[in-house]
Image 1 (cartoon, rainbow, N blue to C red):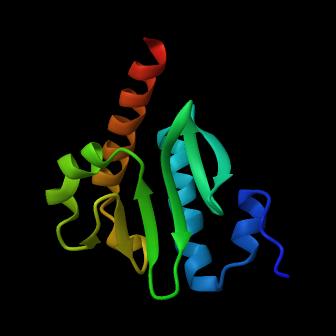
Image 2: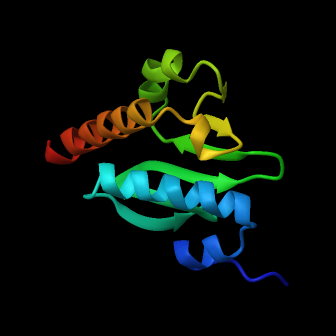
Length: 121
């Protein structure tokens, strides 16, 4: 039986070099941009929470995925990620260089503001 990772560091050790490089860079962007977020594992994925989930990421078989837990936030940023394959709540990519840094950080900040507003009353 395959052992499931208990934390993000364990999850990262399961990745191949290409996925690892991109997801470590994404992890760094998330932690820099939203330092108040708590890093956890949820649904077997690294997840960042501010009371409630903000975002997650995962290495899938054919792509990497960045999950935005507030679909309204992702919808408002859809034009800035138009060159990528987007679902209702995720951005699919193959390398971190495909994610526009400024748009990614702005998306994270907006999501964090919405969570903090809900948490603050």
